[in-house]
Image 1 (spheres, rainbow, N blue to C red):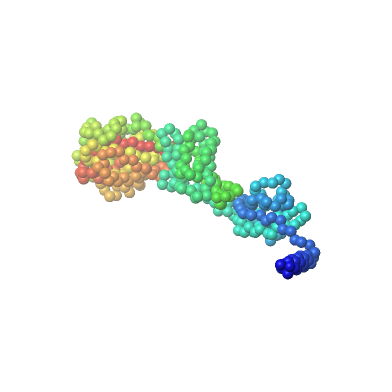
Image 2: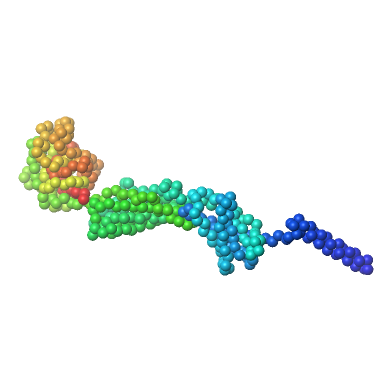
Length: 402
């Protein structure tokens, strides 16, 4: 036992001398000074912005830290974040950057200048003019850009946006003539203008974020102009009047004249409340009538057939503003008639083909070629029964876009 106690004492003395020698060697290696490291930042998160970036990290538990220094641009630039009060997180907004991918190095310091081991944050992207100039306003629905509602409101239709779209500002003029604005949300594909002054310009400007955690929202550099919105105004049928040009088809009897097409009836009608061509009309044949006034943008027709038979399933709609020298000489059944009509100043507004029984109302868009229209010629080329002379119709309506 005595020998064991002596051995233990000698071992302890040897260990103590060894430790003192190591500490002395350590101090000698670093010029007699012990190095102290402050707490290093943990879990650093970055957010990109417009020529700026933000770094965020949890506060260190080291109470000696008085500041953090962030280095970037190969340590040519730096930013100091002073720690005056204890907080859960530390934020650093770094401004005046270039549009570039940055690497940042963070050190913590105590009041004596001791600092932590470095914390590096790489691949922090900063956005700017190049990103902004590449942005485009959200695309509108080219198939149906808008719908004009009966109450005067207008629904604007857009395509599904990019996932980083934040919204689209719409600028327009309301029915009172005042400037108005509203925002199309990114989650919506349409927006309704509560009131709208027909014919006025609609502009729109979209905004985006480069990443989900972006500090800043980027707007497209310039507004785009939405397609012209028109209201379809029903032409006043009380102004319509029959016109009989040479070569026009006769009517079956006086009670089935062309004026039956605007007598106000609704839906397919039965004989004699219809237009009924004469028995020697031939096929194709034409009828002519006057809309009663000049329309600058005649754009839509609705045609309703008879309740049973001889309904046109192929017909052309022609228009002209003035009948002076507009009479055609060829028969409407002549293949050269369309060319002659064109040479006389008539404009082919629409070549309509129906694939049903021709009874119910069908609507077709007209192309007036930018020309004013007052007089209409309907050239009936074929009817559902295949009859070579007779054609029947119940109603015709027209709309002007304003």
